[in-house]
Image 1: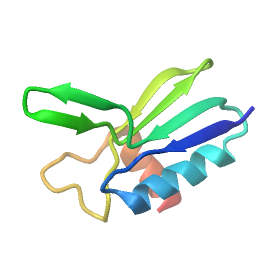
Image 2 (image 1 turned 30 degrees about the vertical axis):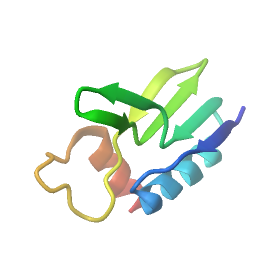
Image 3 (image 1 turned 45 degrees about the horizontal axis):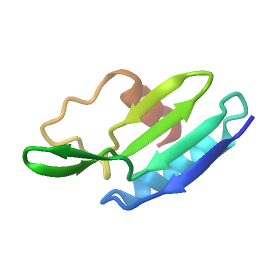
Image 4 (image 1 turned 90 degrees about the vertical axis):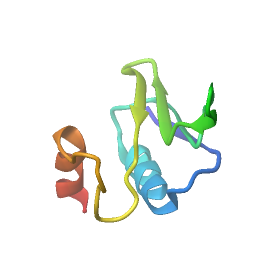
Length: 88
């Protein structure tokens, strides 16, 4: 099992690289990790999703990445905070 990483462009290079490294190290996950894709059309213009894992085992998993140490006005919690505590 492995995860293939397909890179687009985004504004969170460090967080994206950490996610790609973590996904590559997962031995029990297979699929494709799209970073900087897909581009979703909205009334306000195009919007990129930070990362999307397409996995036959886990379905679609969407990642909203945080670059840096703070979350701004976004409430940190749940799985994201637990993952940061383990890896950061």
